[in-house]
Image (cartoon, rainbow, N blue to C red):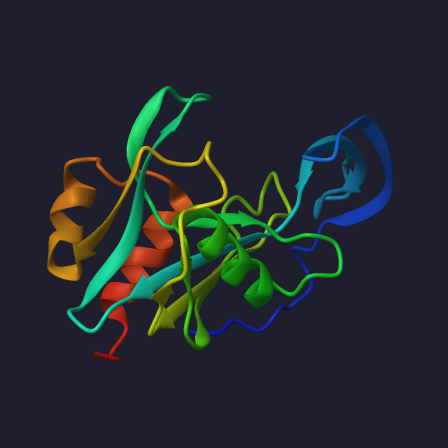
Length: 184
């Protein structure tokens, strides 16, 4: 279902100022006018876009990484992913990250799903691609990304989600889209 913007609930940005800047994150204060006319400061986290790859083999398995996220002190399965660099297309970033993190080079990529994970607080966009026909080209060059790699049967994904073995929003969106994908 696609909604047509009516314009009566639009927030208007009158200005933006930097509060904190790093190559990873930019915190901004926006001077916004809400639909009722009230003006307020609204904090926004500006992040780089994320490219994610769901590499699927001929046996209907997806390549996943078992990894630790120190911010939440969580171990879970994730799809290979990484930031889109300046001047890089999301598809190129997805292919690069898959190879760097897993040692597998993707076959043809096609966009599987697009998401804005927290549009009320951040402008980050997530581009998830499906890659069929990946081939092993060597060892991962990124040594700090995962504890192990496994090809996981698509049929096992719902149970893994229920057991909280998959918790990353980018991975959740990706594997759920993969499960809905009519392509074999």
